[in-house]
Structures are given as structure tokens and as C-alpha cells.
Image 1 (tube, rainbow over the protein chains, first blue to last red):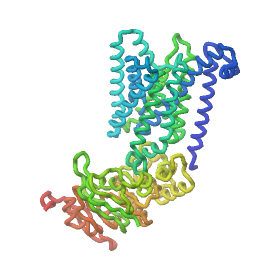
Image 2: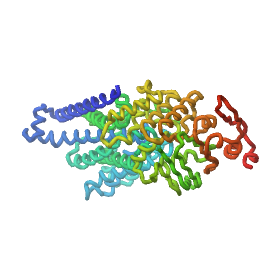
Image 3: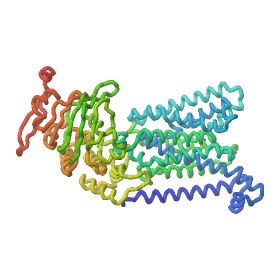
Image 4: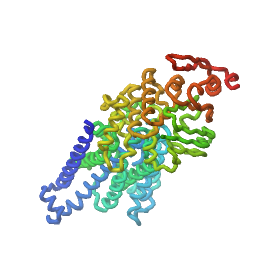
Length: 335
Length: 264
């Protein structure tokens, strides 16, 4: 009785983990050329034909690894932001963190910073995400209203998009403009290990930082005074949450553009299964985010209607009705 | 013996002075009521005692040790704080809520132990919330919610409990119930400091009252002394009715005084 949720949390995490493995295998197998599981394994081990090795290692593995890492980062950062801001609508794309990361990325591209130093792109995106998260936190925490956060998010989103538009406006090169637009739509298509190496270590670092915050976030259910009276160091928790979110979201945006709503959908679906205690939500949201994004990416690859759909477009199509639903559900708290 | 010592405490928030030179020593008393009109600085004082607010001047010692010298975790083990409003941001089960009280006792990666479980259970027994353990806190009635929140504070198992308006917005039945609980908690060798607006409850249940007005202590002592005509007039600008029932004295706030007569 006392651990009735705990069992299902462990169970759920195991299920998610297995699903990730299944989607990983399917992603490696299926594509322009279908491979058998045997060929995939030989490809991974480097004992298959050169063509198979190239397909597995250079075309498919980087893409699916990026998808898993980005999905986990987005799912987890959504769960952490919601717990930190005590707001079920907090999510990096809703509150402008993703577009600020994109702005950071655009700045790095625009000024050619990334040409000399390849890490300039993810670092600049992380700084963009960090500034947005910090501003949001310090403004929204003064107001108890759910609505304020969303309005500040709209403002930050609008400002970031305006500056991105400015960059595109001033860009002398139409190719650069279409590249930025395409990037903003979010995709993991044609990514190589260069992108994996740029982003995944940062995302993993962010995930590790965020996973450690469970107990403090639990205490924050009682509000800031309640949490502080239980010995929680609020400054440290805020700082780690902002840094962890910025790193994992920023690094993901840097290589795959803005992929929205994963962090909104996943924690919301998981909460009824594990209870509302934030600590139980964190790992499950990371795994669930990876499941959702790899599934969406498989969907994108299976649906063949003209040009391949962008992953960000699919998650937004899934996410916006969800967002509306959560608004309607929580609107009592918004007055 | 649990002790709180406050010396020369002054606090201002956003340039506005809230508390001036507060000196209090709380030792042998068990249930101490902090009363005073709105804006008198009661919540500010209790938040200082919980180290949630830094004073501009003065010092606070908890059990003979300066409050600033405690580590966060050790202070959290000494003082349980029950915030105003009984606010909970996520719809947790009562049992999950109560278990949050064990946080100061858990090391970063440890889970709730059998000892923790028994303290959680005892806190729920004392507050009569065991039968609510599976209920979502946000679906409880006001009285149930107040008890669940109190159970959370008790689960800290701290020798000192600070409660900010625990009976606000409760009906009379539940006000009496929560005050009886406070009383019995105080009798189990704890020091309980509680912010109250209800003077009859304060008079009946507290061993000692500290009356604040405009950031200063106006009166401090046993209830019959503090709720005297003169102090009620000075601090609250009201007059009261005094009486006896079953050999217990009571006071009822009765009439507003005009500004002039209240001050002079």
C-alpha cells in the first residue's frame, strides 16, 4: 500500500527503456534500404559489408542517438520546469526557452562564430536558453499566477523570433534564410556523428544535473518557504534547474532546431501513472521523452508524402491541442 | 528544554521597516501565541524564527546556538514550519505530502526507511489523517487539509513547531480541533509558536501570548494579562467583553474604538 506508486514507477521506467531499445532497433533496420537485425548487428560490429556499415554507422545511428538524447532532455526539462515553476504549462517551447536557444544558435551562425569553433553553436544556444530561463524564473516567481508565466513566455518567444527574423532580414544570402527557417522547424534528418558529438555530451550532463533535483522539487510542492524550512537550498536548486534545462534544451536546439511540446505532453501523461510527486516523474519523463521522440521520428520516416516531414512540425501538431487541453483543465488556477 | 532567544531583532522589507528591536526569550512555555493586528509583523517574526528571512540587525538563537550557525539541514531538523494558507502546488496524496516532512532526515540518495515510515504514521495518527492517506490533498475539506498539513509539519519530528495562522479560514469546529492538536503537540515536550488572529482561541489555548503592533512588542505574558482592556485598545483599537465559563476566562472582541480614544 505505501509503495503503490513506486512499483509502477519502476515498472514504467523498465517498459520505457525496452521501448527505446525496440525503436532503436527498428530505426536502424528500416529506411531506404531495409536491413535484417542480423545485418544491423554485423553493421554495428563492423563485420558487415562496407555499404551496410556506412548505412548503420553514418546514416541511421547518429540520427536515432540524437533523437533519444534530445527527447530525453526535452521530457526531463519539461518535468523539472513544471515542478520548479509549479506550473503545469511550463515547457521549453511554450515559454520561449527553445526559441531563445534558436536565437543563440542564429547569432553564432550569423556572426560566423561556429566556423572557427564548432562548439560555438551549441554554447551560444545554451546561453540563449539560459538567459530566457533565468529571466522567466525571476519574473514569474514573484507572481503566483499561471497566466503570468505564459504571458512572459509569449513575450520572450516573440522577442527571440523577432531577432531571428531581423537576422534573416539582414542576411544577404537567401540560402542562409531558408536554412534558418528549415532549422527552426526542427529535424534530425541527415545528422552525423559530428552533431552527436556536439550535442549529446551536453544533453547527458544536463540530464544528470536535473535528475539530482528530485527531492528538492518534491519539497517545492509546499512552496518556497515550505521547501526552505525543510532545508532545501533554493538558490542552488534554481541555479541547477536553470543550468540543466539550458544545457539540455540548448544543445538539442543547436543540432536539431526547435522541437516543441515534448516536455509538455510527456510529464502530463506520466503524472497520473506515478502520482504527482516530482521525484518520481523525472526519470520517467526523460525515458518517456525519448520514447515519444523516437516514435515520432519513425512516424516521420514512415509517412512518405512528398518531402519528409520535419520532426518539430509533428510534435507541434501533437502538442498544441494538448496545450489547449491543459489550459482548459487548469484554467481555474489562472484567474 | 527547547529555547528560542531573540535579541534586538530589526527587519525591513523593501525599505519599509517591519520589526523594530524585538527582544523575546521563550523557554519553559509550551504553546506560545503570536497575536496582533494585520501588518503588525507577526508573519515576519515567525519567518525570521524559521530563518526564512534575514534580519537587518539583531540575532536569534535556537537552543543556545545562533540560527546562522546551523546548517540548513540541521536547522530543518530543529524547526518545523507550517506556512500560511496550506498551499500545495501539486495534487499529492496525503501520505506523500506527509512524507515530505522526512526530507531533512534523508541523505541525498536514500529512500524512506522503516523509522521514517513509523514517524509518518504516528504524525498521521495524531492528526487523525490516517484514513485520508490515499486521498488527493486538493480534494480535502478545509479542516482535513489543515490537519494533513499539520501532519506534514509533525513528520519533521522537530522539537520546535512554528505555525503561521493554522486556523485561518476554518470553521469553529475545526478551529477548536486544530487548537486542541496544537495544545497536545505542545504537551508532548515541543515548543509550539503559533500566529493567531482569533483572540478567544488564543486566550483559551496558549500558555503565553506575545502581542505585536506596528513592529513592536506591546505586551508579553499570560493571556489574561496580555488581553487586558488597555492593550486591546492600544494594539487593536477595540474593546472586548470579558467573562467566565467553567472557570475559564474568555474574551470576545466587541466594539471598535474611535481612532482617538484607542490611541490615547
